[in-house]
Each structure stands twice: as structure tokens, then as C-alpha cells.
Image (cartoon, rainbow, N blue to C red):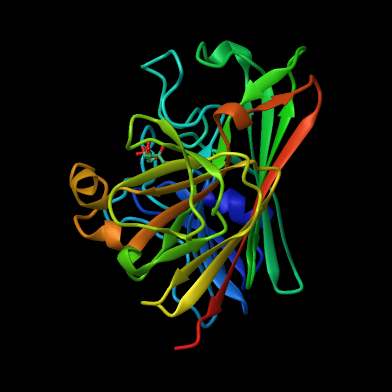
Length: 302
Ligand code: TA6
């Protein structure tokens, strides 16, 4: 559906408008009394959310691509039905089948200072040998002084399906070297930069002192990201998620990423709401699973 048709059906005058984004794919632009935001239909990819009175909370690389066949670098990639590499098909795209495809708009609504957008995509068994099942996905994005993202997965296959998923959130950070992450203490994690060894997180909050790529297992607690450079605390709460990913590429890996600026690693931290590996979801035929994350930001005292 082209931008003009999208605006005729779904625009909310003065609040939500469809426009041509970078590289030309259609995107939603929200300007309300509580926030501003940008959401691409390509991958149902939120790339910007800035509550009024705050610095942007979502990081997106200045070098990101916005074209078919390429994932957007930053924002909140939607990862489904596998996380990172496909377990057996090296040709299958990283992070699954839906972050590089166009989603359709199902609904837009504004009420009580919150703009709600529902995007949808269907997966059909015959479309992919990597994951030959029928499923319907809905992403509900609620944009206001807080941010809610909820991924609903409905199993439309005749049998149970098993999947991994993630809301792969890139948070905008003043200086990741000064950042502290509370909420993952005393949990188990897989350390992907140390031969995928399973480790035990200590009593201290997590800090970032090098390339960091950890899948924390059986974690459901809210996490607080303290960013003294921007003098703020970002809180990420979640539901329907048992894994939490903490990722920063640091200097060398960032330098190898064509869609990532050389110094951008300092200004981002991925804190991802997920179900991965032993926390993968098995969903009976016809059932629906919901995974949500709720992001809020508060000024820190100097
Ligand atoms: O979530 C962390 C991670 O799995 C890292 O290993 C890194 O690959 C990151 O995702 C980004 O993946 P992408 O495919 O977007 O480059």
C-alpha cells in the first residue's frame, strides 16, 4: 500500500502521518504531546522514540541501511523465529525471517496521550525451508511518555511450534563505559565472547568494559540502565520473556560493521527482551504467545 493510501486509511491528523523514509521505504512519523517516534514498516522497525523533555531513548546508526534485504542497524529489530544464526541453515538470515520484510498496518489509534500502532505479518510454511510453519505475528507499539512493544505470535500450524524471539532493543547511551546495568545480578548467562561458556553473574551490577555479548537465562526482572553521562536511568520491564541479552560490540567489532559508525559503540547498549535457547517457546496449535517490553526513562540526580 503506498503512502497516500496508508494516510487515507490510518493517518491520525496532527499526530500520526505516513511518509517516505530514508532509502524510500514507508515509515510512520508520530509527533504528540508526550513523545515523537519513527517506525518503519520494513521489519516493523522502531528507529526513534523520544519522550518530551528527554534525549532520544532508542539508538539507530547514522550509517544504517533502509533497503529490502538489509536489516536496519539499531532501533528495535524484531527477531523471530530464531535468534542470531539459524541452527542448521548457514544461508538463512541472521535473527530470523521478519526483520527484513515489510509488515502491514492493521490499526492506528490515539488516546490519553498514547499513540497505538498495530503491524502484522504472516509466515507460511511453504515460503521457507528454514522454518516451515504457519504463524501470524502482530506487533503492538504504544508510544507515549513510556514505550510499550508487544509481540504476539499465533501458531496457525496443525502442530505445536517452537521458536526463539527477541525485541532486540538498542538503547541510546551517553557513554557505555560509564554505564551500569542493574537487575541481572546472581543469574546464569551464556558468554558468547568466551566460547559460549555458561557463567554465573556476580552480586555486582553489570558494566561494559569490552565486547559484551551475553544471553542471561531464566531472567524476568526489570533492568535499570544507569547512564550518568546523560544523567538518566532507563528502565526495561518485560512480560512473556525469560531471556535477557546484553550486547555491545566495543571497538574492534564495531569497526568491522559497515552499517555502524566507528565511535557509535560508545553511545549504544542492546538490552534485549527475548526467549532464547533453553527459554525458547513451544506453542500448541492455535495458541498465541505474547512477549512485551515496557521502557521508561527518568532523570537522575546530579
Ligand atoms: O543480540 C546480540 C547479537 O546476537 C550479537 O551477537 C550481534 O550479532 C548482534 O546480535 C547484531 O546482530 P546483527 O545480525 O543485527 O548484526
